[in-house]
Image (cartoon, rainbow, N blue to C red; front, side, top):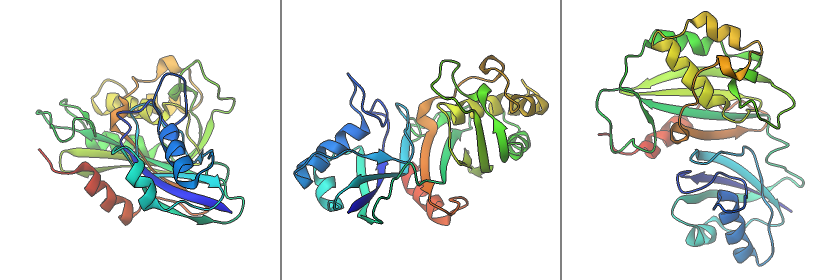
Length: 260
């Protein structure tokens, strides 16, 4: 048998998804609890490895063997992690290998005053933003591009082309949300994209410059890397696109909580 889990987590307390020495990770906590409930060692495969501080509302993971009840897992997991579904999957299902797309949302609070409620959920950006410029930036992204400029120079990536299926900015009051879906992402890719687009929207960079960066320019030519706490892994697709999704929008309304 193969099991499929859907997981939400607050990335703040963790050193990212993947196991690593000297840091508590989401993978470590989930595998520990799964081993307790199933009474055997469990190794998880995940749709998208998130960095330290990055959140998830639709992470997908898989493991061999029967599924453990989500209720039993949640009783033992730390408060920052919740399993929303744990079900049987087709034999051999692999959350990473079988995923055809991943979707992320980056949230920006654009107002003069900071918000205690958005402190670890959105980048506070008190500067002026040209929203039409943000939308023009997003319109440049769909299609296949070389994203070398949007990942660290020191990298394990050997392929820098990614196929972006959709990209858009949505406004929800003072919060601007950047939604993007692609076949796969590179480390820091979304955060550098956001940092660069904010420079365009602030008049410090031309739209044409963003277009040029998508042709494989070096990392030094792109903008700053936006902080991790504004980024959410929204979900993984398996044969069908993820965005747009009314269900995801409703979920984010719960995640962001009360407004300041």
